[in-house]
Image (cartoon, rainbow, N blue to C red; front, side, top):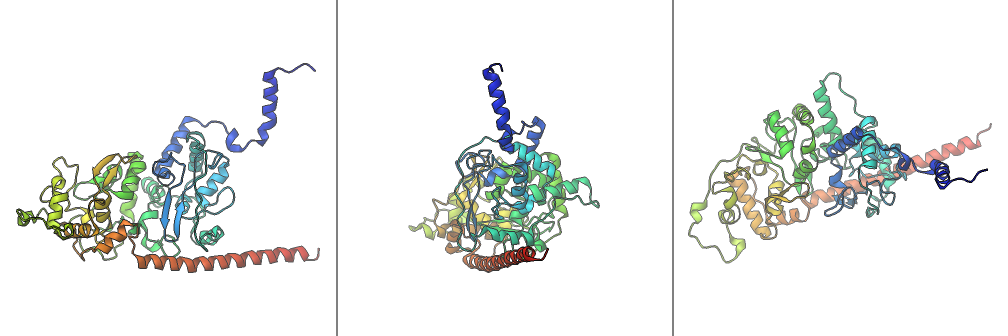
Length: 472
């Protein structure tokens, strides 16, 4: 036998090792069109928003998502084999995405919207897998583990949750609807998972199917009604206005995006094609109207240009800043940009505060949080549209200012209290009573689910034991 050259020895060694390499590691590089398709779908799914912590590298996880049962930490989904998903086969990737089951068999919590991603088609799962495995940069190191208190730390309880609430089939087009409507339904219900924020949830933290997209609390923010209702929802918006909002985050005379919605636009929605945005708008216009009665008039049509500044000209400010009136606070912190009568900036960059959903909704959370945090746009939040005043203004001052803005230019209603502002500052926007109710309901439900799972396991074991001892 002749001596083998180094190249021949290397080739033989590679062939011997090939069967033992994980599928993802030996999978050929995908074609550029497939990778571009996967990148587009990942943007539509807004994966980067939840799987990137502030200051972290994209998709490396570590972001803490607040829920009534505790903080759930997002995972590293880069193709790293050390802490990421680099060893996942395509089937394991699909199971995590659509069924909430990790490669090690552990169950994911529905803070990861796999109940929406369950509708993603096999073709789109294939493109997403190719993108994450071959286009995303691998970054080693697992994200910190989620640590919930008992019984919420029992991931196996999600098996029963899935039986109750999880779709078991990808999206199927409605033959009675046109192609555009079906595309919009696929995006809204699936990849863009609008219901995750905009649909209220029951005590088991599943979306309430009777109030789809009717608006829901979102930590200190409020994801508004986006059904076809003309008062609380989008019924009075034209299709082009909806598309403009999804693309740019602002429609003069209607509203502007801030907080989580601004992030969704910057990371996801602005990257969609016009055809997909048109499809989303068409579908939203068809969603049955829901109105809980909180808004008596169209939320974007309230208020008019006016001010009370003449009454405070020449009046000395009180020694105690907490004694400042609403007009005094508006004059000191808002009028320079939004002008004296709240008609917005000269260049139109800053909106009017009347005919504005932030001041017009019965729910005041978004107005308060905008005052506290400001509006930061862009994928890196470097485009400052409005500074936050949370570090300058006390809870008393913010309560006074936002109550004045709502009364003067919007919905009015009960004045906000300093306790309301303090609660929103700390992420408790739903109120302590609601939080306790949700925790209590979830605790009871978790105990029931765990008991049911234990009973099913015992029953299955008994059945197997009976078969093993049956005469043959």
